[in-house]
Structures are given as C-alpha cells and as structure tokens.
Length: 301
Image (cartoon, rainbow, N blue to C red):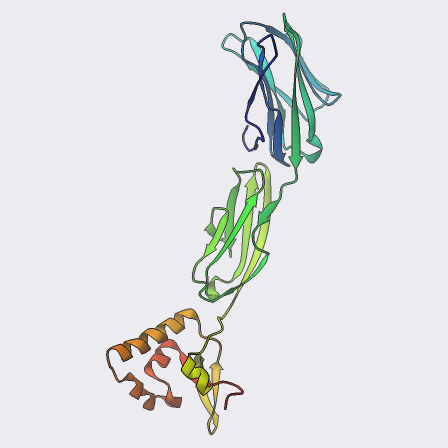
C-alpha cells in the first residue's frame, strides 16, 4: 500500500480451531488526499471456496461481489479489486479508496461467504488525518552573518513524501532539510518549501534575514573606548570628527581577514603598523584590506 503508514504490521489472523488465515490490516493510519487499499485475502485456497465478498463501513454496505453475478456498488466512491490465483480461483479482494477524505475514517468490515467454512469476517480501523507539514522553526528567521542555519520539516505519517526548497525559483534542496552554511546577505530572502504527497501538494514559506554579529572589542580597545566598524568611505566633517559609511558591525569574514593580517604582521615582525602614517585617518593595511576602521565608542572618554 503505497503512501500509507501502517500502525501495525500486516496481520495474519487465525480463526481459532479452524486454521482459516485471512490477510488484513487491523489498523491503518493515512493522511487526507492519498489513496488507500484495504486487503482481505484468504491465503489457503485448498480448504475453502469463496462465493461472495461484501465490504461495509460500520453498518453501511459499500460493495458486494458474487462469483457468478459480479459486483454491485452501493457507493460509488470506492472500488473493489479482486485477487485471484493462477487458476482464476477467487482469493479475496482489496477495497480501494482513492484520494481519501477525513470522513472516510471509520471501521471497515470484510465479509467472506465461503464453502464449507461459512461466513468469515475481518475488521479494519481506518484513521484519516489532515495533512500537516510541521517544522522546527517559525516562518521568520533572523540569522547572524557567518552563522549556520538548518530548518527541518516533515509531513506527518508520510515517509514517502517529496520535498523541494526553492529560492527565487532556484532549487536549493530536495530533502526535509534546508541547510545554509556561513550565512551572508546574498543568501537572505524567502524560501518556499513544497511537499508532495500523493495527489496533494502543500507549501510553507520562510523569510530568512541577516544581521551583523555584535563585535566584542578586545580588552585594550575596551579600556581605551575604541571599537572596529566597517568602512567603505570616510570623510572629515570637522576637526577630529569623521563620517564613516556604513559604520556597521564587522562580519565574521572581514574580522577573520583583519585578524589574520594583523597577527601575520606581528608574528613575522613586519612593521606593517607604520603604514598607519600613510593612510587617511590612521587606517592600517589590514584595515584597508578588510574594509574596517577603528573609531571611538560613543560615551567613551
């Protein structure tokens, strides 16, 4: 039964004292919109002959099949699929529910009229639930630049569901997971998840935005009231006052570049620090390379 998660394994029911074996499901869990087949198959044809098969839901007849007359349907929303052996001997049937609905939930009874065993009945409890995609994050996420993010979504009771994550109509994942490593501004935006299960298609959307990490100053800069910010342009507006653009928090990648250049110069005794005398507003080489500048914090004296 494709697409149906069974709460119990296929059950071989044995009629006490007679050894009559009927293959059926005791309980079936399904989601709305998928197709379901409920089996009622006799697996020992040497003992009996099946003359008639009847399926009903609770006390309502659904379909009756007689081996000489054929099938008669009381409800048109079900189908009866007969099972025969190589000699065309009737073994039983499947009750087929296409695109199951919530009101299909209930107790289904298969009744076999046989010779010489008489009437044999088996019951299946069907529970159809609404399809729902559950995720471990809300639809809006704010992620720091340089951080990793993973969103996991799942269609309950449907392990065969297919997943597609799109951003700007571009496929980014075909699994239950959306994973973004080293988040940057180019990866921000709206991600659309489409989950296909049988004839149904469900969607979830996630708006992922970025924010710069708040940089923590080193002890020396903290004591001196200094901090490092991003700098594309710097303009002197009055003595000892410079307008810096964009003056935002330094990203992880820029901070890494700055630290590597700075530590390289110290480790190899390169006097790179003297280059602060050659760049405007006392910027060093590693400030220029990483696009940063050292400024005085507000409120610092």
